[in-house]
Length: 251
Ligand code: SF4
Image (cartoon, rainbow, N blue to C red):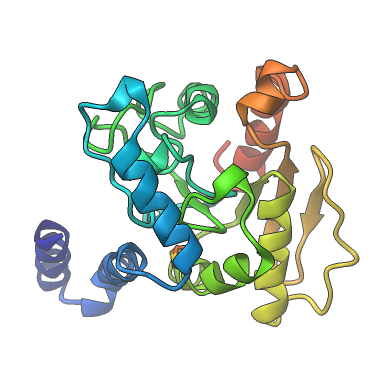
């Protein structure tokens, strides 16, 4: 953490413009706030418990077992929004979609399209970096059965709002699944960008131009439930991100 702040400070001094470094510092503050959050007692108890009992394959590992902050390029033009950390994925590794089946499906696509430096996400110190993209979720703690309560989603909205406000270069938001889509719409209502959610319907491939000029894209979530059954395949998923790249002006 000090490293990031130090780099930001040096950058500011070198350029003579303190504001140029402020997004890095803000993102670091947001990260610290998220990691320390204890607002949802049910989820915090569940995540700690998973970290103690572990899955047999990971008995030798120390689980992260804390809220999982967003991850990626501070100058991102594409925001990728998921549902929540996987109990034995991001709740174990501490980085979104890292060390689980959803990530195994998603990162090769991001890598193929130049949005990730590696095709596999194994641990938070595996060296993988995102380019032009930021990954976050509407709920930062793994929920039992992948089902957060509406109140838990509302509790966590503040963290998403903080990241969104700081990632000022974002042009496209890709929502992975309906819960992420609804969570982002709730954020837009709260932020005064849209009046109501009813004009926006979730469907794989749905695309909307928002009143603030951002583009909203929806895809089925890359969960094993969807990818193993063929509801979502690599071609379908790649098309969504090709379109995201295009709308973000990356082509
Ligand atoms: S889900 Fe979000 S609001 Fe709830 S404890 Fe985790 S980080 Fe905090």
